Length: 494
Image (tube, rainbow, N blue to C red; front, side):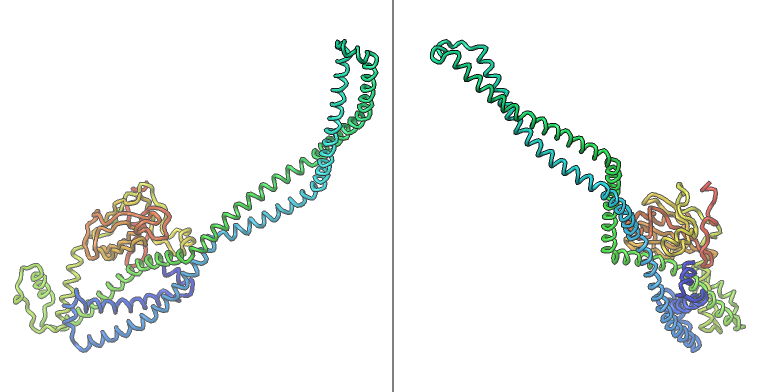
């Protein structure tokens, strides 16, 4: 059971202590209910001083139990907070960020080594590049001069070959023209002779410079390849780390909201369990009271309990008149005894024997989480006293056996559930319901629609502790959680 897990945290020392506390609390609640609306007729008859004294004792016990229960509740809240904080820590990205930082640091060390290996060659290549640019500028200037010389020489040669201006020759004479052209050609050749070696030398230096760059670059290519690969890997890790940091920031900012949602859901599920335990205590207290009153009733020799009980049954069914009941010599305890006994029999007569249970919905996809599955406790910090039956959102849920609707709890977007009571101290719980079609106190028959399944995160009735649409189905026998598969038809799963 859930409280056996809490025992390990030293919040509850023993299971018997817990049962005694809850028994005291619920017996007192039983008295309160009996003095309310539906059972006033029974306890109004118990007017003796002994009964008043017993009620007073129970009230005192209620006060003490309430104090103890409050202490335990505080302990439970502290434990739940610790479990939640531990769970949040595991969900944060701190471990991933630390791992990324470590990997990035190791990669950066390797990158630094490669960087040092290529930095000097790279610097040398940069220097050669600068020198190359200077050589190119010189080469361009010298090239412009050579081109000018070549153009001038070609023009003069063309004039010498095609000269036809006779009039021009008559003024200056062919010899004078040839002399001028020869002098110009000589000057141009002198310029060309002076520039050409420099041009060739610069061109050689430029080629030599380029070869040196290629040689250095070739020597560092493998290192640069590794450097680039590691740099890309580091950048990828940096991006992943940034995403994890963003998730961590988001988780931190919404931590309070997460705490509240999870705490609310746990409380709702705890209420469901406590409701189940409370039923056992109420029934036990009722049976004990009936036994005590039965003993008092037998002490009266003038009363034929069996005969009067039969007459009162007939009265309840309308087959007898009030004056047909022999109440001679009856005390108020006797009357209360008969009333409570008849109430018990009337209630029990409405139930159908529940030794086997029908599936609340058809398990088309089997079982997604078994009874007390270890992984569930590790994830949610509480025992899984049920089986989870996966089903589409809104699948009809039917009563596994005829019985009485003890609880029909609609918690909005929180955990909603239905509890049915059956004969032979059998109880069934239907959790994560998205719609409730029954009311508390209603009698239902086996196979009758009681609600719709849910479980889709963020939807009505699902609560926070769910990973997908399914039915959370519990079975208790005499207040003890049992494996539902022991009560359900096994052939359906085959």
